[in-house]
Image (cartoon, rainbow, N blue to C red):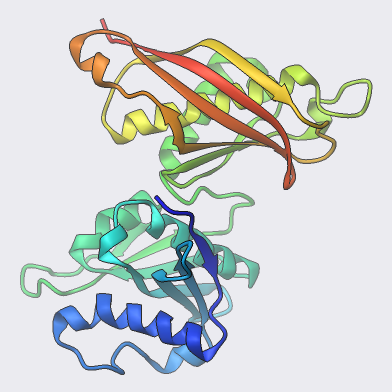
Length: 301
C-alpha cells in the first residue's frame, strides 16, 4: 500500500480533483449529473482529501456545523480501487479532529445500509433507523460523542476492554499510566505520562520505554486477531530495542500492521503462530527508539 496523507484542498486544481472523486463515487453510479456532488454547505464546510504518493485523490470528506456543538460529516467517499485498506478510518479521524478543534461535542452521519457497519465500528451509535424495506436507499442517522478528553476513532469498545484487561492483569501498566491513545485498524498508538516513568536524569526510564513498546506490539496483534475472529494467548518470546535518543517529554509508541511479519495459519492446525513486529517509540514527533518483538500466539487447547 502506497504512502498516503490527508490534505486540505485549497487551490482550484486540488478542489477539481476533490469534487471529481466525490462525483465518481457518490453520484455517477446513480446516474446523477455533474454539479449534483456539490451543495450550499461547501462554502462554509471543512474539507479533507486523502492523497496517495502521486498526489492523486483517493478519499474525500467534509464536515459542516448544524450548531456550535454538532458537526455533520457528509460526502465521505473512497476510491473503489483502494477500499478496504483503512483509508476511510483515516478520513474519519481527520474530519472528527477538525470538528473537535472547532468545539464540536458530537458528530452525526447519515449512512446507507452498506456503510452502516463501518460507522458502527468507528464508534457511532444508531440514532434514527431508516425503513430500508420500503426504501433500500434510505439513510440511517448515527451519532458519536467527542466530549471525552481522548477518544478512539476505531473499535473504541475493544480498545477500552483491552486497556481494562491490562490494568487488571498487569497492574504496573496502570501505575505507569499507559493508555491506548488511538487505533485505526492499521495503526495502534500507546502513550504514557513522563512523570510516572522518570529516571534520575529526568528522562523516561529505559524499562518503561521497553514496556510501552512491548504492549504496543501486543495490542496491535490482539486487535488484529479480534478483527479476524481468532483466539489465542499472546506472549513475547524475544525482543530487541535500539535507543536512539532520550525521551524527555511526550512518550509515544506506535505499531503498524504493515510492519508485522508472519500470520496466524498455524493456529488453524492447533499449533502456535509466530509473529515479528517492529514498534517505533517517539518523544512527541522525534524518533527515540526502535523495538523489534518476536511474539508467539499460543493455540487454544
